[in-house]
Image (tube, rainbow, N blue to C red):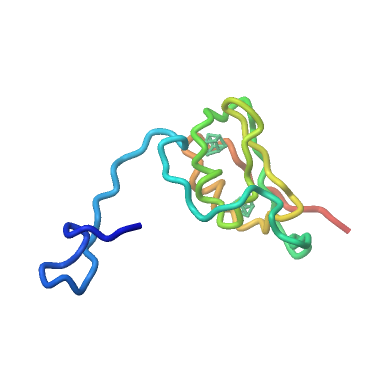
Length: 112
Ligand code: SF4
Ligand code: SF4
């Protein structure tokens, strides 16, 4: 991206803080350097202790969980619907913490 005058300090040496307009929907966010779920070469969730369960009845389709998941493992499954790729979810709980309607519950992952 080309730097314009208003993106730099008066002496032109430093970037200045930019306003980030409020967005209402995922479609209004700029495309970032992200990948779809499952982009990692190997399954990396073997050490997870908890896993998120999404209650689709409660979900309002805001896609906040989709945006905040640090591993990009929540994906859209249709209009107002999301799912978790458990092969890559590390069970951090960020999605559950950020869900505005508490549609995500972290439960103990019972694997052998
Ligand atoms: S628990 Fe963490 S890694 Fe798993 S889906 Fe939620 S935010 Fe992503
Ligand atoms: S943050 Fe909650 S309400 Fe929003 S899409 Fe995810 S599960 Fe649904």
